[in-house]
Length: 429
Image 1 (tube, one colour):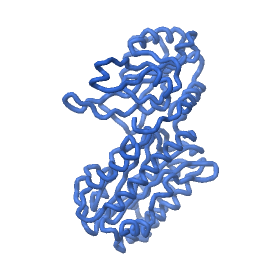
Image 2 (tube, one colour):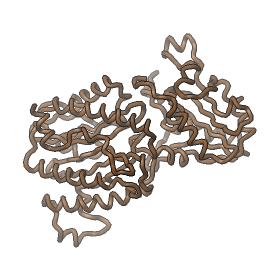
Image 3 (cartoon, rainbow, N blue to C red):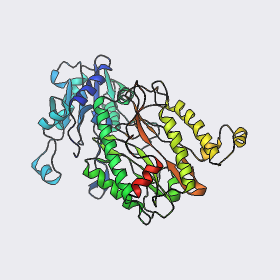
Image 4 (cartoon, helix red, strand yellow):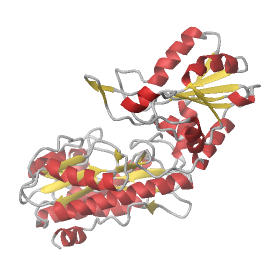
């Protein structure tokens, strides 16, 4: 792993908090992520399943966690199962965790090899009334490929049909939404790496550069600063491509007079940041571009104030939409009279601002959490208003990551340049 070792106390505390949410005689079974085939004899780069990392810190495939706090066998109350390495594996694939390394990382004393799992499972099941199995319950995600947790759940129900099973995801989601101090520090590190990537780009961008060259500068900065990589596919979109919300081709040339919208975030120790900035390719905003940029910036600054305990994403979106509607009228894109006559189901502003302002952030860039979940101290969310005027090839988004606290919102990216004048100054240094 590239990132510095994470103290095992984080994962020990996470498991304790999970166990405290379980009914008596419960059993939790969590699986690591798969290695996903790429082509030929190649796999895509491995990235750990977020819930498994949250509870173990183990960053290796084919790993299993058992939590059975009421099991009579003390050595199976908390047990980790790993690949047993060999000389052949070491030569061809590289290092795999030793038991001692896994203990040091996870804080789990009882570490076994995978071939011992089935025997251990039968023993812990003898003391279990309820078995909690995990799955990815993100509501907008649809995959044709079942992951390891889902495959195991199907197999388990077939082989042990008389055991009662429950969903683990809702419990873990509630826990993961509130970030501990250790998690916030990891996010701050990822934010700092993201800042370095953006400031490197500000000094690099000029007319004639390709979008993929700009991405390469970001990739370089992330790599030398120990990031896992990107938390999501980066967006480097010039000109009209900036109006495509999830543009990821990043293959066009950046031309004089265009805007460049970038949406990227470093992932450090599997914790992801999410930042958007829009800059002029030639280092100088036109009058119209700056007017649009400052309209988004004003909304951004006011929206940040709404990240207080008790608010929700849905309520925040409603408040920001009203701000944005006013700014769009000020830019001459439509009139107050047209707003009065609009179809309430199809408001005019959505032509120019068609996405929400916030989503939860953490181990996943679109982290666990409902849009109706009241904000609580320790939650981290994005703030990302934008304006997209396709007719003018203007696409602008500004996005930072906000920590909810009792004493008001904390912008974890407040040291990343965002004022138009600051961006121009750095680009023309």
